[in-house]
Image 1 (cartoon, rainbow, N blue to C red):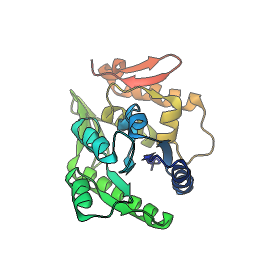
Image 2 (tube, one colour; image 1 turned 30 degrees about the horizontal axis):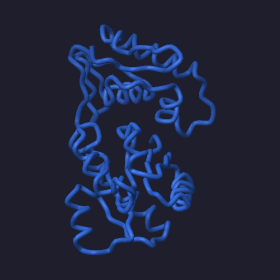
Image 3 (cartoon, rainbow, N blue to C red; image 1 turned 30 degrees about the vertical axis):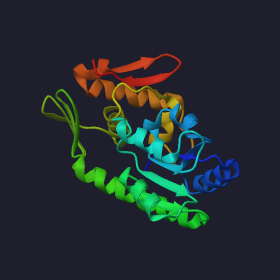
Length: 228
């Protein structure tokens, strides 16, 4: 499975470094931001989980969470709050904003990691139950049985081709660099050349027939499945 990407947002730089170090040891891809303002400048849709401090500068973790939940691109992303505030009202505020967990400071790193794993498991389980297929016009991926249909005709895909197409259909109109595709699809493999990615996408294009032109190459940048 591709590694999960987590964004840690906290104005305590030392704490961010500790969290980043320990989460990366667990296999996660971790970015940090030292304020909500800095975090909101990022493309938050790429993250699988947000770890937010509540007490920060002008924009609190609560305000940032509200902005995340109001954006259709990010409303589904799990949010875990970190806070030194321990009142019932604060916890209720967090959960009313759609928090998936609420961890009080000081905490143990082992506890944070365990809770993050639990939140991600719940999110993935819920996602698998809700999403049974991905489609674009008459191009359809049946996720339960791993089938790909083009104009109602089943087409045989290798595992890597299937995973690349799934990535594209889940993120239409989003540009992926080769490095991003490499991390998501070939995360645990020792050596993968750019040429390997290009070859798989060339085969993928041939297999999806008239939709091959939807997979666009941006020279020097990467690939994108365009909703034309």
